[in-house]
Image (cartoon, rainbow, N blue to C red; front, side, top):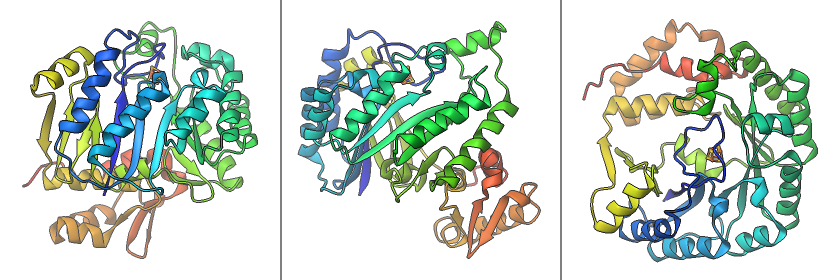
Length: 376
Ligand code: SF4
């Protein structure tokens, strides 16, 4: 069993903070769909049974429902899934109409991840998003009316100049919309983005303390309203965790198709070329289009610690000992004994998790348990 990720590398506008692989030129798109189907049908599968399919990007909602149907039909030639499979489609609010959401539901989409980011137009303008706040509310309501089983929205905190009051209003709007899942990300400055240039020129300043305070506001409000923080950036109620993303955090195998997509088979990771023209050419000419690395035991241990400590499932002594061996468990115990983040760590029934107060520092806490040297 595993998960499938499909990368759709096109966007209508370039958001200022984004360093994902995408193009705002659609010139390669007709050939891309053929290449994508070629890759899906020619790549040796790591597994046949599928628990989750995730269309991400880029912007999957640039696809027509017919194109989406073709991609699912292509996947169905190689892989199988049943009614319980989670099939997620990322959408931008401006792409959603009553007809579109009905059509994508009818071809099999049962979960929508809607890129809202903020319910304030000035924030959306600052980030160069392609939609406005009113379109987001309409998109959520249309998705509900169409009976899409699961809806998630994305919000961004730590936006310069966005006060805590505004952030609280964003969260209140989310709560009012009665949606079961929220992914909330801190605005970060990535290399080669417009935001990076703005920061370098001194036009924009990001403030870690401001972000930390907004993260705390978020956690308090959501927990108070019955949501569970099951991963640092992800909250749900009614048990509606995202199956697909959870499979990444639980080290399950996945296959990724499309430019820049990553795959993992339990022992090695591969990543496709992050260039639409090169991807199309290589896939269609039968040339290599991905690089691959075999993960050492230390690499896999570090990943287990990093992803585990970000989630409510934590890391388990049993698993460390069974998968990585007693030496790794000894190493972990020594690091735990005098860990500088000890006050943020819970050690219960053989499982180590990061307490709510330490969630903002999860990555730093995880790295304090890393094996620096690859020893196998
Ligand atoms: S954030 Fe999403 S919509 Fe914006 S440029 Fe990146 S991939 Fe495209």
